[in-house]
Image 1 (tube, helix red, strand yellow):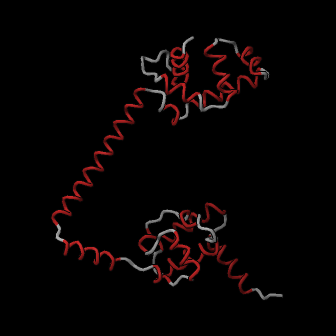
Image 2 (cartoon, helix red, strand yellow):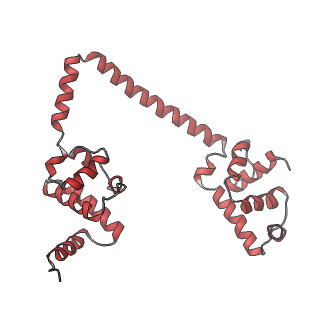
Image 3 (cartoon, one colour):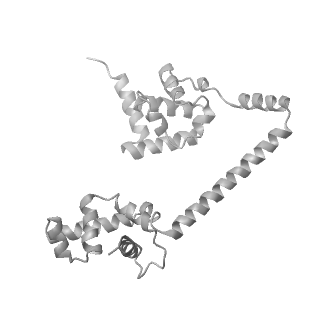
Length: 231
């Protein structure tokens, strides 16, 4: 069986069709098979290319029949993953290409509109707009954070309260070494003190989802540990 015939057979199995209608992208299928584990690749070869039975395929793999069927089923399941399927179909490849072109054209239109606006604005107007924008931003120091937490946030290139409010998660800050649960507690509490209740509630929900402990429970524990007399 040739590579093309083998690829078409795998395509039909993955997409659950009787024939490929010329839609199989042979090179993409063969490259995708190459991303599987060696025993999974061999299982596909033995069963689909060579036409062996399940029992013979298992023997060639050096495993029992049940394990052989499992290896073969796992290989097919992996091939059906959307990230792999998109590399095996001509139609899907063309669709992705057209979508990428449309997205690029949309970005070009946005950039072109921005360039046209820059051409209209005078240097004085541009400077004025820049100054007005800077005045609209609230400095991070207004939150009254400790120097330690303040500096950790600055390391993530976040320099204003508005930039914090754009965050949907604190994971971007958690990658900073030293930004732990106490730092997160301080930041959320300060943001709530300054009226950013919706943002604080969202981050507390993220906290509860990750730890399984409500934010208020954690704060209570922190308060109790800080007031507990040392022996």
